[in-house]
Image (cartoon, rainbow, N blue to C red; front, side, top):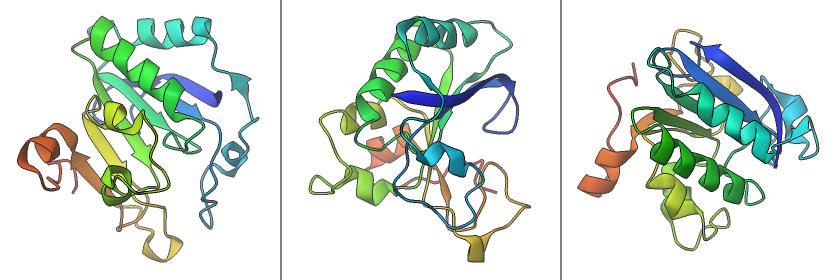
Length: 175
């Protein structure tokens, strides 16, 4: 997996001060995407063990609330193995850190066993993250007043509660 950028003190992509990792590769190509350079799977730098270690260490200080993973598309089939490894390391090595993941795929697509976006890593990722911001950016539904998302079709999902209750639970941050 490649990545386009890492922000180590980001306040725009989730609650609190976070590390935000922008992975490369996206086949969705949303019209007027804010980050089209990350569509290319070869964009940026290789997400090496050293970079992964730096990301994990960056979420350990008490003033960092967690990690946000954006793109590109973290849930592209080609990205899921590296994303799964990273989110598991975060949960094991920085258990107080929350993990937000932004995906153009919806919860329904990601959780459907017959969906084309699923791999052997999908359930592992979903069971590890805290928040999923789902849905493709839709320019017709763009709304700059929304927190943590670009268009009104996108949802901020409380993943642990969704898994526990067996239906989508919208996060309190979905304002």
